Image (cartoon, rainbow, N blue to C red; front, side, top):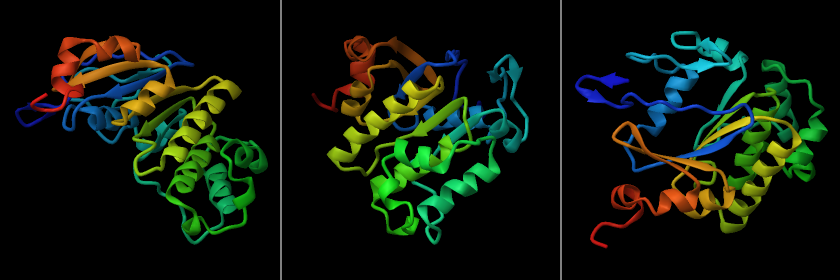
Amino acid sequence: MRFGGINAVDGLDLRLEADEMRCIIGPNGCGKTTLFNLITGYLVPTAGSVRFGGRNLAGLPLHTIARAGIVRKFQVPSVFASLSVTANIRASLAAGNGSRPVADILNLVRLSGRRNELAGLLSHGEKQWLELAMVLATDPRLILLDEPVAGMTRREKTETGRLIADIRRERPVAVLVIEHDMSFVESLDCAVSVMMLGRVIASGGFAEVRQDPRVREAYLEPAGA
């Protein structure tokens, strides 16, 4: 993906299995968000393709890509503040492919006790969980999580990690995560790809990429260390 003379995503080759979870890490401006925008159709690649289940998604309308089962959760939770928690989930059920009972989704995301409360009254972390519930209501095949624990307390981060694990245990789903919180990335215990200047410079387990000299120099070690 080129923007003028800048290769925001530069010949990136990334494959994700149907039930795989992978974290994408790297410094600001390395191309992570552009990658998500390419996958979800917000951008059309300058060259190459974005394939999902054998189908090239490049250039397809956003709603077609969403209907194919690719759902994105943004960093800042986007919920209907004036509606109840239950009504938010029902709105997603109506808009997507899902047919799961609302009660089941509420149980999974730890919000059963808040079902009748206005979404705007939830804590920041609870709003993040509600948006995850709205994602699940569409019965996704690929979930894109953009900094899912940004602004959360330590307890909320721990609970979010457990929630993601519960989601993946319940049914096969691919999950791609952008995250800057390295403690959270490590706790997910999944494959990690490191981006730099639009390219993947290292992939592997967290412990493996953490020891890579290129990764330490470019991202993990503070300036002047």
